[in-house]
Image (tube, rainbow, N blue to C red; front, side, top):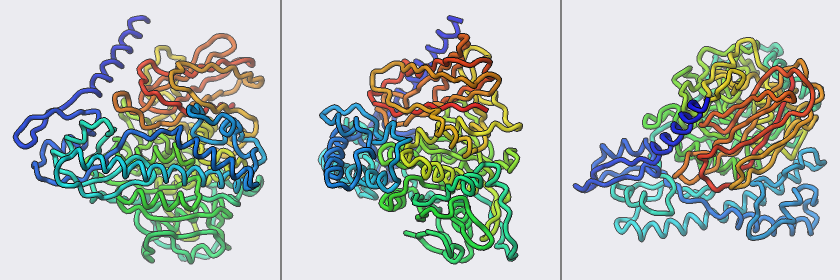
Length: 616
């Protein structure tokens, strides 16, 4: 046993060394060493082939801002809103208001432990708006200041700006090889990615022709996920909830939404393209023939087109106040391809951490080729495609690589999804099912709005394990047969079940909190008095934040569950920000849960985490 543990430790050290390696390239006749932790691999391969004067489009990420400063400014603004009666103090976690100071060791989210409080989504939206405006103002000034410093450091022709972000510490530039090398040496630079300005987004769906019949449309896919039950019996129609939708090229056709709260923001409408229409109908359809999952929600739609448009597309939706964004498309990028973490995924991770929004993205329809680099976000919920019985659709994408984050996170029906605008099959149809479920849960429990790590944990632990799943399909580094990561490569955690999720939150079967920097372990004791004879699932999820690039791209946290009789179950996969253990419980009593930061996690960040459990 000790030999196995020693080998595991040595392997981790070796992996860290590989990440810290460097490469040599030729610049103006001189061999230089590029810092591999700053020059992303996709850009490295391009630099080796580029001429010295070639202009290369790159996405440059800076070291992050001081979040405590931002939080202090948010505190001051919220205090004014409370004093002026705009919001009630109960809307906000009191520790955020009361513990203001130069070192605010609190969550990025403002509603910690307030999930059951009787606050409205409107009040939550007011607070979210304050947070978003503050971060945007700070980052806009920060990026301008850093860029002005870069100009003096480059000591050559001024770089051409493609996009200067207002939402993240990020700027896109056109640079030559020497300029890129100089940037990689600067302490203010975190990472530099290649930016393929010609890479385009495609729809993750196979559309049918427009249907010509007038009969009511059956929706069994809503029944198997619990969506119709939540909508019709619990009254969770999405009322008052704002949802965003990003399309590849074309916006929904408004004539299909006579009774819906749908707003097309920026983009074009093509009468021959029905993808956006059908994705939107799954969510907010509401006519004589068809009712979508959340017919009373407000849906805001925009297009992304290319990676260079990420700022505009996502920024538009954030300004509308959405707390969940559906993205049923993926980008084809030849240089980054599949299963790699690119600048768009990093951008989405940053936005979800700091702007209280949950992204839901389709995994794609390329089977084991994998998931597009644009959809490799750690913090987003990536959705695969199954039929109504839970059987995986043959084209649904998944990641087979051992050293990658496992995608999809969950599956939902996406086979023969008929709407009043026609039918479709693909992960494009599966993603809006999950987005709708999030809207329903947000309507029931407004304070979960935008808390991506908590929402993911809830959906994963409450998902249904189907007869088609193989829970041993994922390779894990655990040392005993009883240890299980309890995920399937192809299915993720299982089939979406919003009723299970609603029951989980109603029964307080969750813990959310902060793993403070330097904290090696958190121990929790949970008394479960009805576990015996049932399948017990624990799910841990935490935010991936943009760590210093001298470490892994995310902190790795181990989930260990100890039953009342001392049996240990553990999930310790290194390359993801979710862990799940599933086992047949044999007794009631106190289950001890240990949340352990891996010894090699070097970042000095406070990490928002969420733990939930469900009995099946």
